[in-house]
Length: 353
Length: 235
Image (tube, rainbow over all chains, first blue to last red; front, side, top):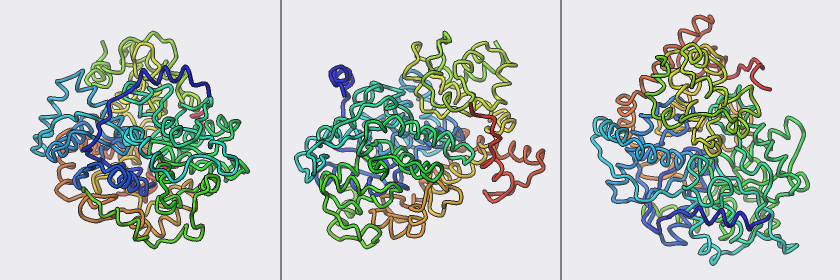
């Protein structure tokens, strides 16, 4: 892709990302569909990068999917979010690190609303006090987990076992980056690279040896649309959006897709299966499908983590074509083996170290 | 100024989302929902800013306000800094407050969202809690989802989850005192009232349609609103 203009835009959209002492809040979607990604993220942060990442058992959903499904009123959502801030404050942390893009967007939106409407913030403080007796300070720093991996992309590259390079041709893998809509479309200044040409994933891909594909529908929504997927009668909207993206990226022959929102990789993965079932149409080279990854999975693969410990067997579209291109050492027969590998699972005891 | 417009103004998102629309149509050009549905956010914003009660009532009872996917692509591009997506959210809230949502096929689906996502939030503390939610409700999840469902507990342990466990971690059991706080927040801030409203107006509509509506999701009305698509929504 032509980079000069985009690099100038990227330079205009840099954001401050805390260096250490993070308060981690989990993602409802990622926990259900990509649990291995959150585990890998914490392993990378704590073991590879030696960072303090704290998680409190009493944090809950931010209600984001309910809020954007319009069943949860804005004041309720704001007060639940205020409670998350209160638990963070009580734990002595100020750098909020959400795993979810919907949450990240919601926290950003709420902080912006409170900035413009201080009386709303006051009301939320009163409501939180009344409901829970809690008080809170607003986060000093708010960064999505993909921002933090972007920040430490060079450190990850320095520890890398593999590169995003085709071992047979020596060519960089052709990677589609898909950014969750709520990462920067609402508040471009809060995303690395802004809303039109976000750099958060492109920066990781480039640093780890791959090439990012620019294609016409790069910024199109994956099609989640909250109620548009959650209710069966509406799912035509969701699959149509993903199909539009696949058709648009097809001429560029992508090897893989990398995503930073928890929902997008699930949709881009599952809708490929559905399109094949409905129309007999398969995307990807040799019609093997285009493997779709979370950024944590890609970071984990680059660092040499086992694909089945990362949870790649939970994808519907097989990831093996990419593993084979990179030359990753893995055991095909262990794909559906549920036995826990002790050397990897040690990290799972690293809760709140 | 109409009464309904005044009600919309009470929603901070409406105040944030509508400055002054000049009807350029950039929002419609970028909107994924406008590509798929008979949907035009430009037109909706134009109708809202007439402040005409009749027009707003018509919107609140319409299918069209339920087509938006809330991706917020419109907010990035609007040259006036409006956010039609936020205006939609304010309209949807008001439609539910007034009970108008049951007048449209798409609006009636709010009960399905309340009885799935709403139930999970208040019961487990997560927006999604998918053990046991199989491919009968979600056929698009494919064969891998059947395997995941069949091996849920072992698989999640392998993935490092603290499934139903105490302390932090993936899909942990959120302590009861935390859940009590969440439910209390819903009571104090109108969340519970919204849920009750969705139930109340849905029961009324089910009666009107002569459909059975019991608790949970195994009943005629739920199946109807979850699956029915009359085919008139798309381009």
